[in-house]
Image 1 (cartoon, rainbow, N blue to C red):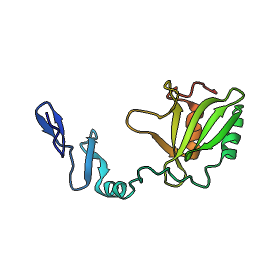
Image 2 (image 1 turned 30 degrees about the vertical axis):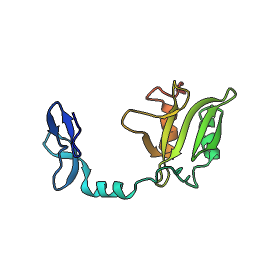
Image 3 (image 1 turned 90 degrees about the vertical axis):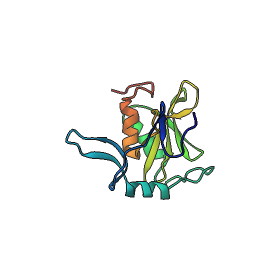
Length: 155
């Protein structure tokens, strides 16, 4: 069965994502019946901010190794931070075990947190896209290790 250009097929029915005058995509409804999702303005902003394919993201000037080393030292963890291909890879010492990788998300101090997968490479966390947050929250996210993908728990 051919996939239509504007929609998703479910069996033989064409399923078109919900939208209205406020939302370009309605992800769902609250218990009170109010829609939530991506607004038309957010959709336009996302379309304007398309990353250039084939170019490495620019590194924000505040994404420096020293504060990251100091952050983990506060938890008694000795790490080495290496700058490589638009991001910072964090390794535990002395054995240089990969811990996490921070890639610039291109907006302010937002970074994507990657983990060292069982495939022996850095990968995004989750099936629906990467985990993107501020640098401070990203470091705390690694320490908390709630998804259990960083291979240790400090506390």
